[in-house]
Image (cartoon, rainbow, N blue to C red; front, side, top):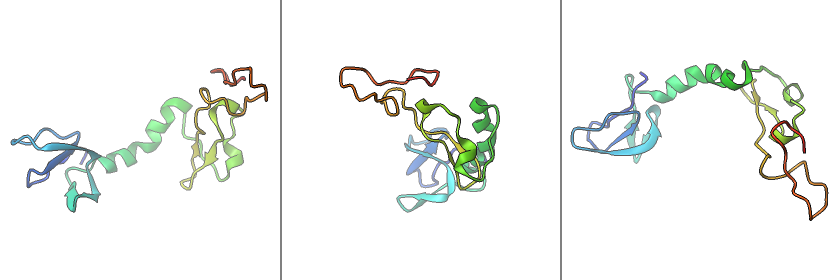
Length: 125
């Protein structure tokens, strides 16, 4: 089921699909049996990239963090790095990183308009 989808009418193909015999347009979506594009199905039992992505969610999430962090409240997710935003506990019970503040200067504003308010890569202002 981890394949792109070519609509039988030749109207379009999804990301990860080979081109149609008559060169159909590629739409910027993964195949997905739960979605439609302009009223037409975007996948079937043999083409459902969305399902494959969902099945690998935890594995991919652990690439950078060393493992998926399970939680029941936001307090369990705090990493003490002011430069990466406020971490939260998702509805699925996994910690979600905050946004990257390294280019915005939030949390590092010293109130002096003459200084640059940026976070360093190691979480220091």
